[in-house]
Length: 423
Image (cartoon, rainbow, N blue to C red; front, side, top):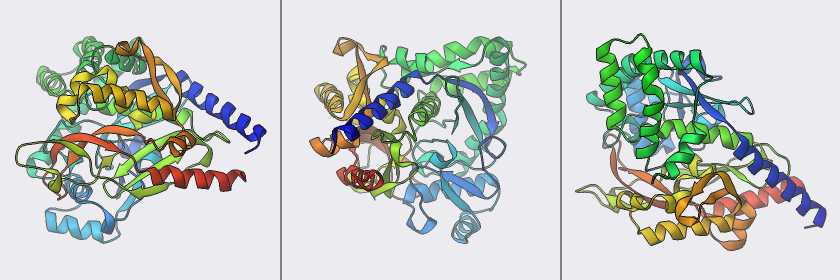
């Protein structure tokens, strides 16, 4: 590789991480997916991970699709939902192609409410759905009547409450800035992927005055606040959408070798690289190693699934595990491992984040800007923490754990990069 090419890559990578760190995502509102997400339409379901057809979908993703069909009223029972999913009537597309992200199966259907994030620095809009909580929920592939009931309540009550709240927010300021919340939460024991106790509390503290001043009936206000307060993952979808804005700010930079998407659909894992447009590099998704709910073990686990690794792509989540030693009680490992993992991620990234600091590591910035060259050179791959879904549809969450992205993804991306740039 010539020195001039190396210089172009270095300049491109520096620009990418600079834009990622300058990105200023704020929560501006709540909308309905078909009215809000670009190119969203009826009989379209967005999903986590790279493109996939119904026949190849994993159990939890199929379960979430069935649940979304029932929620939308396109079918009246499970058998009919299966037939519709297999009929070709529904268009399946990745969230990432619509500037969206969503955890686990990641299904977003036309009438679902979505969070609206706007990057004040670069003018990018991103979106995510609302978090249902843990356990037997749609994103883990469950679709029983109580799961559908919760989704309907989220649409009819929670989203209405949050919509009125955000209208109050916008009368006073441009929105709720998410990056300072992530930064503060990292100093309070979160890593903002699988531990969001502090982030959720900070968001609630930020919006509660506006909830109280909005025209919301007391029952809806109480139910909405209690639901969010009891769910430590309330903040997850917000920080994911913010991370998507940060990484989009770093995308489509010529010669850049920085990864801007890490994602899984329960069958395949995939990445995007900034300098390679929206080309998918795909490999089989690995099965996480985890801490299991009673009665379950690794033999029940589905391969890794979800868009939530966008947090690590933006420089937090599993890359900031040293900031959240208590995360090991949820995902396994040890405190020493959490620290070791963060230190390893410095070896495959471009820089230390100027916004996200880790107190335990003398307030060093988190590892930011995953570089495919460094991964292939060192053999170290991005390691994240993750929820674990049962391999069969309808069951839901069975644990949480740790997983590393396959090295072959990055080798394929580097090969594609060499072909693209004639190296």
